[in-house]
Length: 168
Image (cartoon, rainbow, N blue to C red; front, side):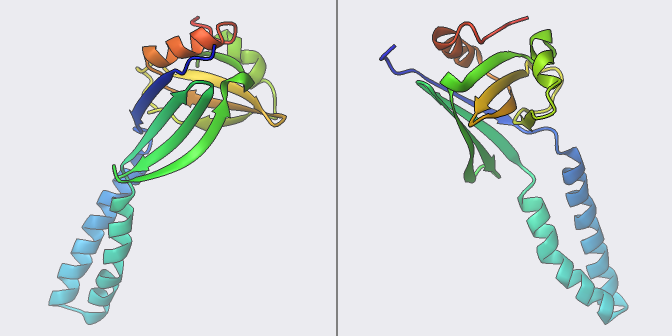
């Protein structure tokens, strides 16, 4: 097992529909405040001007992707915002992997009944995609990651930890 392996997955986050709708709403409100304030009242114009940077920040941070990078025994999960800013979120060693199965699998039920389990969702949130749960026992804490692995990533996990990977 001294050989190196590599798998990379990029998943667009589709869960945050409310944040996108809020950005659109704030844009419309800001435009209305600016137009109405410029025609009728300076106070409303001032509020509209203050809303411009707030709206820009809301719109700027709405596009998000998750990146899974599996190199040999290490899994690194990062978030990429607006296709420009990358931030490392979590790192795990596959030696700490307890179970990996489709999210609806009964193999994960025993872990879900544990009140100490922390769940992190790094999937697109689209129910039609193949979402897997990866349970890690990292530093005495059980953590479940919801991910959308590719076949290459599943194959790499199967080669190294076949007993932890389940397809049912």
